[in-house]
Length: 300
Image 1 (tube, one colour):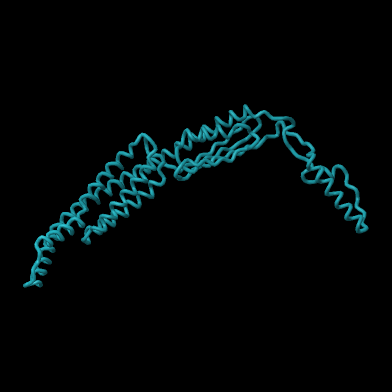
Image 2: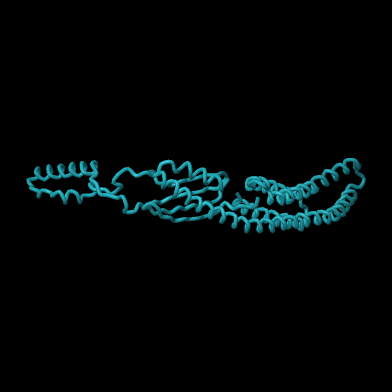
């Protein structure tokens, strides 16, 4: 499975049966599949079809799907709204009562003037409009939009994969630099400890010094400064990251967990560095890991 981005967009227009419509599908990153729909309520049974269709092409992401349908003139007619007419008459009666109370006489409204009041007339189908055929046509049109949407996510994912491959290679290079710097540090640290021990013995002339205690302390210092385990774990994480790039299933969440492990080892390496060279490498390593983590947030 290739790397797939969670960012995508597609729009498809269509016309049929006296209707015009526009499908729009857009997504951004998200921890799970969060689907938000804006669909015409008068088309029955459309929502479950949309949810199933989107789930078949996306496993993660905040995905918004909207459908705007405009009815054509065919099959449209003008009719009186009973609710609108009743509301208009009630309002007129209230105005006439108030006018008479104040000694005013109003000119009666004609029927045409009454019909021109807002809400009295409405436009719509002259009879119940079947939506089964239209729903099927819209579903096919959504398939076209989702195909384009999925293709865009794959194309962006391919570019994202190249970035991730480069970052993994950079991390691997920094880990090997850290391993070399740790070896150089060990030699220098040994010489520094010998010199410090010689000064301690010289300053403690005449005092009894327990050789076993000194050996224990030196061993403890060596263990605290040793980064062999951190280097080994970072190398294992690099191998895991390369394998994930060719995973047969959505890899984004696993990559997020892996980046947490990368950062944990890098932090420990920096805390044990004991040399400016190793600290500089550790900081570069943390920076590269953080950059990679930002890219991983867009991987499905």
